[in-house]
Length: 195
Image (cartoon, rainbow, N blue to C red; front, side):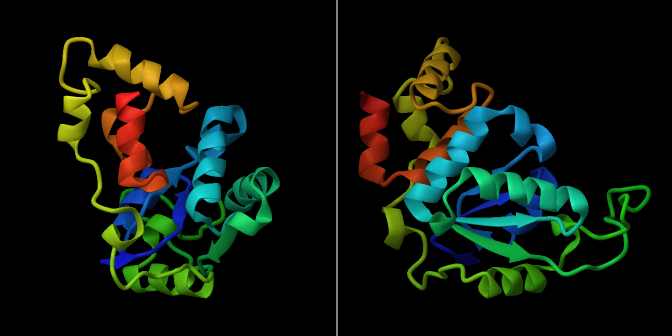
């Protein structure tokens, strides 16, 4: 497993699944074109970019470039790196037919191609792994201890925290945990949970 400093933004969950088999970092989704109607999600991308940098990795079709340009227009360029997958024609295994342009997306790329495009984009690969960047990550038990998961009123408490942090209201406990670990040091995240 490779460790990189920057967070990565992809279009959807299948892209995220494919990428998470290659790198250990915060991977965020745009939800496709939902990014255009979701200011909270865009604010999350900008926050991640300012904290650790952001690699934009969208499909190589027209829709991917529209999404990439939206992010490019909203996040200051000094925090962005752009990774481009090659044009390969075919269809992903889960789909019945190829996409509109017939190109494979991020989810259809082999792991070695994903690593190559991240290296070409200038992603900062870390030798020491994730702990060297932010300390040991929070776990689900930390969320449980803070009353944000597994309790009778944990959903209400989690919603209040999401609102306070200006995060999307539909984030699950696992997604919240990923953001806390990806955007904050262990010490900062613990302060957020206790305040």
